[in-house]
Length: 487
Image 1 (cartoon, rainbow, N blue to C red):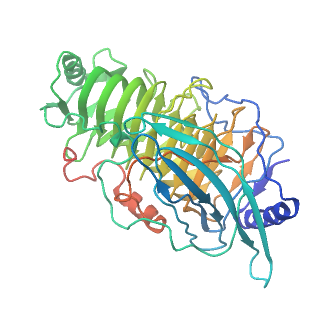
Image 2: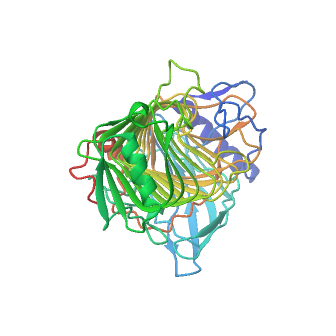
């Protein structure tokens, strides 16, 4: 039996679930399912077709927003603690907003409780309370290490909006997120600048940098192709640090050949169009640890979706192994089967400490992202026309999903295809009436509730959920910066 709920039905189901919980005074749990990673040729992935029994989803809306909040963080250097109250609000028709305080590093205990009001009838109110959430710890410089655990918890539903969702209405392109922690990310700032126009020139510049400690900015002009790259099938940004690779002016393009960042530190990739990569690792951009402090900003990455086999290309923007302190921002990723992988296998659960914000995902099948283990922060992204799964939290991952906008998306958030579920912390997300949650098989579940580790300040760049779609459409991708070297 397929669990398929349009948003209006999910709202009714959510209210009934809360009423039932009030009578039974029990907590709703999520069961583990078998592994089903058969989409990807390497690294596993989201399944594009499945059947069988399913479950129900939490916090649905009709043309509205699902919210869950986490507030009142208190932290000191070294060890910090926080007490948070989480809730989810749902509306039928319109924008629902919620609220959240800044996250922090430290140990967190979460409880959830609240009231469910069932659409208009006077006195039709049921209350439910329970406990859930997990402990998240982060210590050292900038949260150098962090651990998370997640547990299922009850969900509170109510009609009407919460005007306390945070965020502004203007675009801010400054670096934010995990890449700012533990020393930050500056790329080649303060060093030498060279310009390249062929793949062979780019490869030589990267090779020369291996013997230099001077920061380097590489400006790329024109089109980089396999034909002007000698015998290369990819560009290895390897055994280097303090490097920026930036498309000059309106942006350069990599047509049919991609970048691989490995054994590298303090790398900025900006204002590049990379597409149709079917050679080498078949990724547009791949980050493979050990690597740290990587910022991918204002790029356009795409392949093909409808007219090719799912394995013809691989990912658009992947992070694997011991890669950490990563921010993806203001990128346009589209037309892809396997868009953004975080963790290449069921054993690859390193805490990559990754932030994704103000990215535009369009016409993709899945992996937006597929996130195995560790902590993530996914905020202010626009998701359009997603055909299988969007945010897939797996194997104990905890992702704060905040102020995102979902339009015609199947399964905006889910925990699927791993024996161990992952969690999400839902904060002020907009889900339109064309989106739905469909749990088709025994290994597709609603995620657990968790509290994300977010030690950095990001209020300056945070956009209110009402403005996300317009702002991201206008500013994500290449050619949107007056001076891409200025950051």
